[in-house]
Amino acid sequence: MTIALVTGGAGFIGSNLVSLLLKNKIEVRVIDNLSTGYRKNLIGLSIQFIEGDIRNYQLVEEAVSGVDMIFHFAASVGRQKSLLNPQADAEINVIGTVNVLEAARVNKVKRIVYSSSAAIFGELLTMPIAENHPQFPDSPYGVSKLGGEKQALCFAGLYDMTVVCLRYFNVYGVNQRFDAYGNVIPIFVHRIYQEEPITIYGDGEQTRDFVNVKDVAVANFLSATVATKTGVYNIGSGINITINFLADLMKKVSGSKVGIVYDPERPADVRHCRADISKANQELGFSPDPDIETGLEEYLSWFRDDQSISV
Image (tube, rainbow, N blue to C red; front, top):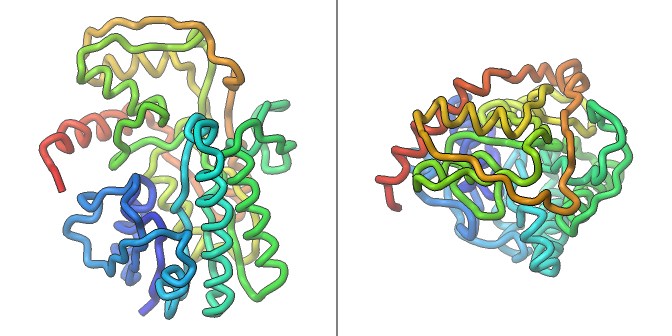
């Protein structure tokens, strides 16, 4: 049987992929230090779980032993978090990634999927954003994710590995919990259920490309099973909506009457963002569901249920 290692597999995106892999009869091993992951994301799933940190090379090498493919999600995520602690960001996202790659080399793992981010692009010059858009990240997080990409592509060139780097745009969906520095959707949901006004920075006409985590999990699966060569791919929905539209839609879906408050625009916030996903579509067969309203309904339902589970 095929065995996959999922680093950060108790986290938001990783746990969704774990479920998909199991449905496709792939045996799963997870390594996660539970700093941002949750055991309850893996309830009822038949996996091998290793609690540990990817900065521990010896532990990583043991986790990699005997696997056929690696999905690397474990990371310190977020622009603001990286500004507050750039050292930890670099240690986890750069050194941790090198540990995974080196363990893969030692154990002769041929297939690796690396989770990158649209944060590598920095200030956007063209729309939609293609893979060859200039990359000038404006945060330690963007730099570390780009560094991880370069390390992964370097290992692919030096050794007998196929490495696929996926650049995620704004991912939302089941298993995504509130984080003050996280994605706008769980922040809005948190405020809605606290019956507090939604805060929008600037005029709300800035746009973002939101992609359901289910589609991101499929993109990872395709990268490990369909991709025939090393490469990088944008993973988004291919459409963008305004933050004002998002706030109104979330109020509609939840039935909430909370108000909307506008605060001053935050420095360095990107004005518009939309992924060009044509390469992923043509080479991987990636075709995301653009129906964000249904996706939000599912997420809001999960969010309500999640409040009653504590593991």
